[in-house]
Image 1 (cartoon, rainbow, N blue to C red):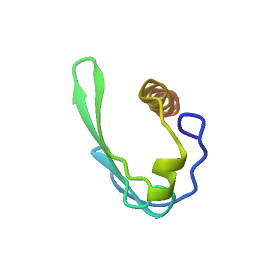
Image 2 (image 1 turned 90 degrees about the vertical axis):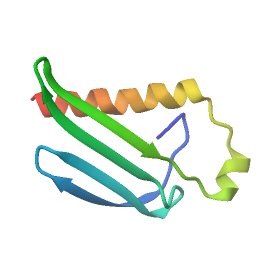
Image 3 (image 1 turned 180 degrees about the vertical axis):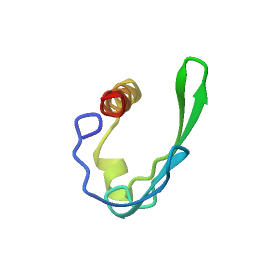
Image 4 (image 1 turned 45 degrees about the vertical axis):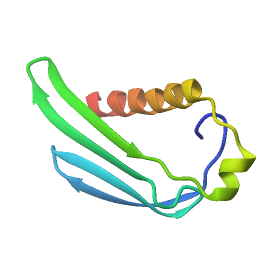
Length: 88
C-alpha cells in the first residue's frame, strides 16, 4: 500500500551482500519501476541511499491522485520497518 492505494506487483530482487539491493518491478500496476538501495558503512553506522524510478500504468495515473507528502510518509514508514528488521 502506498498513499492508501494497493498495488499488485511482480518483482525481481538482485542483492550484493552488504553493498546493495535492487528491485525491478517486472509485472503489475507499477511495471518498469526500479528501486536501488546502496549501503555504506560510516562512522555513525550504516548509510542507506535510495533511488526510486516510479512508473505507473496510464490507467492508474488518471484514476488516482497521489498526495506527495503521504507518498513520502509511506515510503519513510517502509524504510523505518526495514531498519527495525535489519537491527534485530
